[in-house]
Structures are given as C-alpha cells and as structure tokens.
Image (cartoon, rainbow, N blue to C red; front, top):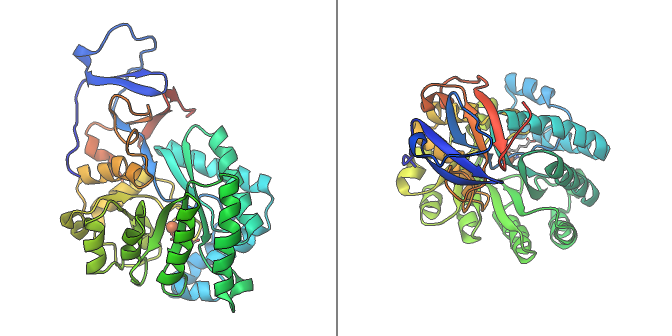
Length: 385
Ligand code: NIG
Ligand code: FE
C-alpha cells in the first residue's frame, strides 16, 4: 500500500472517456486538442466505497443526546438512530428525496469523489427501499460521478417486525431481493451484522440469497461489538467487510488470507465520540487490503470529505500518506469490484481525475477539513465547479 508512484512535470493524455497515456511532459505525444495546465497535484479520482447518501433530515437530537452521555445503541433502542431516518424517508416523496440527495452527492463530488457507492436502508419496506434505489438510479444518470447502488434492506429490523424478526429476514430474501434484482436497481447487497441488529446466521441467510440473485455482497461487520462478521464476509467471498473496530484476531487472519477488502471508516468513530478505531496497522501487517470511506450518513458520519477521512486515516489509524492514497483509490475500487479500470492514473483506466491545490502530494491528508480539491474530471470531462 506504500507503493505509490509520484511523477513530477508529468502529462496525462485522455482519449474519450479513458486515459490513453501518462508519463513525463517532455515525452508527451504532441498535438493534443484540448490542453489543460494544472497547478498542484493530479490524483486519480477518489472512490467513496461506503455511503448511505439517500436520507432526509440530519439527526441533531441523536447528536446532542450522545454529547450528554447516551450511547448510539441506547439511542437506537429508544426509537432514535436508524429508525428515526426510516420514519423520515418513508414519509418523503421521491422528488423531495432526490433533490436532497442530489445536492449532497454534488458536495461529495466537489470534495474529490468520482465514484460513489450509495446504499438504501432507510426504507425497510419494499416500496420505500425501491424509492431510495430509484433515486440513486436517476441521479446516476444526471450526476457526473459513477454511482454504485447497494441494497441494504437489512440495515435494521423495522418496528412492525420487532416481535417476529424471522419474518422480516424472510421478507428481505423472498420479496425485496427478487424485486430489486428484477428491476436491476442494485449491484451489491449489504447487511448490518452486529449484536442487537442482525446476527451472523441471519446475515448469512440474506447474503446467500443475494448471491443467488447475482448481487455482489458486502457486510457492515464488527462495528461496535465483534460477532464474527469479518469471518462471515470472507466465508461468503464478499467484496468488503466494513467498519471492523471490534474485529477479532481470527477475523484479521481471515481477511488477510482473502480478497475481501477491509473498509475502515474513521470519521464514524470520531463522530460517535468513541476512542477506539479499527486495527488498521495490524490488518495491513497481516496482509489485508485496507480501503477508507466516509460512511456519509445522517446518524454516525455526516462528512462529505474523503480528504478529511484521509487525514483521520493518518492521525487515528496510524496509516502513512501513501497508504491513505491507496486506500481511497485502487483499494476502494477493489471494494466495489472496479479495480480493473479505476483508481489509478494509467493507460486504459477511466479518465476520472482530480486536481488538488497543494505543493506536496502528502498535503492532501494534512490540511484537516480544508477543501483542497480544486477541479474534478469524470470520464474525461470537466465537472462544473
Ligand atoms: O455505517 N452501522 C450502520 N449503519 C450506519 C449508521 C446509519 C445510521 O445511524 O443512520 C453506519 O454507521
Ligand atoms: Fe455504514
């Protein structure tokens, strides 16, 4: 992950939506049509491989209750948390939800994210889940970034199934997954596998059904209390196991021996006021591939900035500058199954690029919270500022 190649006085040639050539400016092929000079550092477009970008109102009361000492799970048990956003999303029109989501995703793009995974999971009933996924589909046609939709119907057990959770798992497997598959509304399926939310057995049941319908699988695993989520992700051949602040030693070994990417979300633990973080260094030393993402959501991580997350990757996870760059580019692409042609400035890759207004490339993870991204190109075209 430290193997990052940095070129000075470089040039990139773009042909259509792909990168055709990269190398020293002196050796660049002449005669390009549309030459753009860049002041600063050109990075591959950043890839935000974990967001819950479709939601209604911010959860300010949860934030204040946490400040006063009530913890995330207690707030959720009292009807706040995810279920608060579920009531909100169920009550919104598709058009309202689309307008809110559009402006939020535009802000993520302005902060350098050119590929963004977006989960459903604030509907928890068929119509409201489909409503979120249709919003993602429409925005993927309108916004300049690539959006990767993920079905997260198993984000929480909805109130109407509190006393018969097995029936909700069955509903997800037998009605929701087939409906989402029929309309090709999602590429991946995710489950919040956590004590008090979905068990390992329930998560296995849902993700096994998801694989049968052709979805790639991902897992919210071992976020707050460990339950063997990382091991389950590996067992299922998941693209990624995400969070991992409470991963076990056997979970680390399992990820290290697999192609499942460990997606770490340091902003979440910071926003929740927790002192623990995922064991990033131990994961890397063991041989696991680590990616970073915002986890952009209204409850635990309302940040739109991958550069901020990179700063936290250095300060909270003990990663090196080169490692946080790898973590939001090629490794984040791998967490979405897109590493063949995204996450690098290399011939043949999609021409998603960002300019960062700094002198030294390491400053992208230094100016904590500053908006350092000065220009964004996706598929070879400049995005509106
Ligand atoms: O990734 N952990 C579960 N899901 C989100 C939180 C969503 C919410 O609280 O609304 C997360 O942290
Ligand atoms: Fe999440």
